[in-house]
Image (cartoon, rainbow, N blue to C red):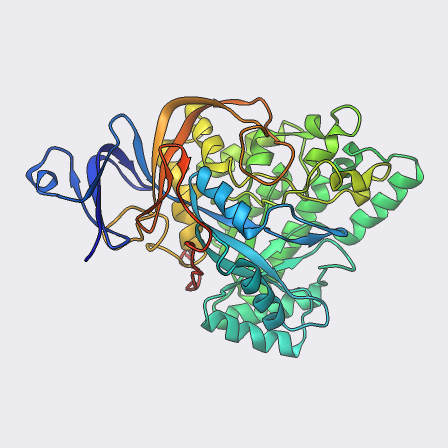
Amino acid sequence: MGTRTLIRNGLVITASDEIHADVLIEDGRIAALAAAGTPAAEAFSAETVLDATGKYVIPGGVDGHTHMEMPFGGTYAADTFETGTRAAAWGGTTTIVDFAIQSVGGALREGLDAWHQKAEGNCAIDYGFHMIVSDVNQETLKEMDLLVEEGVTSFKQFMAYPGVFYSDDGQILRAMQRAAENGGLIMMHAENGIAIDVLVEQALARGETDPRYHGEVRKALLEAEATHRAIKLAQVAGAPLYVVHVSAQEAVAELTRARDEGLNVFGETCPQYLFLSTDNLAEPGFEGAKYVCSTPLRPQEHQAALWRGLRTNDLQVVSTDHCPFCFSGQKELGLGDFSKIPNGMPGVENRMDLLHQAVVDGHISRRRWIEIACATPARMFGMYPKKGTIAPGADADVVIYDPNAEQVISAETHHMNVDYSAYEGKRITGRVETVLSRGVPVITEREYTGHAGHGVYTPRSTCQYLT
């Protein structure tokens, strides 16, 4: 026997529409929508009826950039797949795409298998994988073809972190050429890591060791230069390019120029760049270490360019780059040397709420909120319309959202496995009330009703966002 759930009286918001409609869910999928009060809606019946009067009914969020259990700088990201996906659900996100890592000298398959092992049976919500390519060679290039066929359709490369993940221009070009053939999408961490390492060395020699210098050495111009170079390499290869965690207005300008030329070049930014700045990195004592991530936080004036990019669609996606390290015992590894502070911030639980606050503040519209947080990431990474929308046939990943509830973000109340919040004390309007993942309640009226193992691995098709 199938199970049916009916969500009545809410304002259904997707990337394209806002409509007062009732939503019928059957066997984990959206079965039908009908305008509230119409005969069609009145004919709906279900075992479970949820009243969404005065609330929004939105698709579950798709966070296309997370790092659960990621090894970095001699430690590991503090969230496991279990704690991280549970926190994501609390924040209205119902799908994550995490990064499996190829070790230098190892096969892509080994890295992917290791990440499957970490995630399988532990996730509260659905998940997929991108592949970090750390070692481009003939075998790696062949493996890329196989991974695309089985639903791992995006590959991340780094122009930063020499000696760890770094790829030189030749390796990047080869991977891009392969992606142009097999339909894969190259995701790029665009910072000139070779030049940055020189500036790090010089800063430390001058005795500049505090967290704020992390932002000063990772210059906006070196993000822009790398972004420009990545675009040109992609153009030579005839491949699409997705630039991750764009933080600098100069990098946005490079993406805008490329898109004006009609290139398949895309950009993602993150809440930390929209709401935080170098003022946070400069907090007294060692507090700034909480905000060390790469690309780094920028001076506040960069935020206007990021918001404008989101409005003009020169930036298409907001993901979190969720990579949490506890302040105590992890961030403290960099006491006296900013270059040893693990790079990463917690945020998977806060994204949907912070972007709703952006709606309240007038930066973006409600539909654009859903577009950049749900629909476009699903299309970018080959999961639409299964994910990212509310439409017949889509997975019933649905959030009932109270747009008027007020909350204060705090480490005391969040569910991420980390001992601080990057947004401690921030007052925001809007809060997740109920979350369904494939029709199953994971959050029920602000109570966690999900369980590890409900979330399933989601193979992906190739990018659906190409022009």
